[in-house]
Image 1 (cartoon, helix red, strand yellow):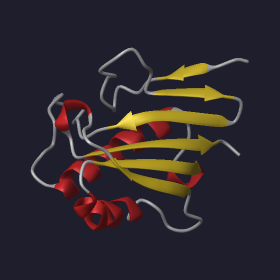
Image 2 (cartoon, helix red, strand yellow; image 1 turned 90 degrees about the vertical axis):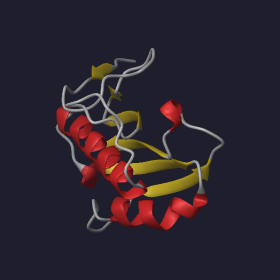
Image 3 (cartoon, helix red, strand yellow; image 1 turned 180 degrees about the horizontal axis):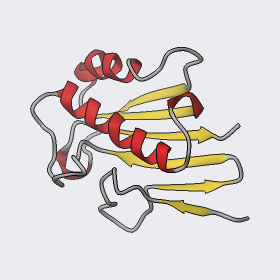
Image 4 (cartoon, rainbow, N blue to C red; image 1 turned 120 degrees about the vertical axis):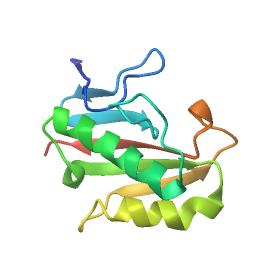
Length: 127
């Protein structure tokens, strides 16, 4: 199995021993992104919408580094610390897709890195 490590300077650097994404064959596995602004290294925390938008922009940057975009996503996982944020996050998330939506699950969790409220990971295919 060959794998290629994908890292974008336009997305936050990993905060642990992992890569932003790993490509194997036609599949790209993008690690969970949180609302860190890559230009400042600071968390965006003003609102759940602002957090979700930054997460999606970080995902966009990693996908772009691999030559892909949101139309290539086949599966997403959304982690929320509160399901009361579901509608707001869903609205922001949905604005990044036009049709042929990916498969998805949304999971409530007790906590996320850096005490953020949302984290999203994706799997994309180059085909």
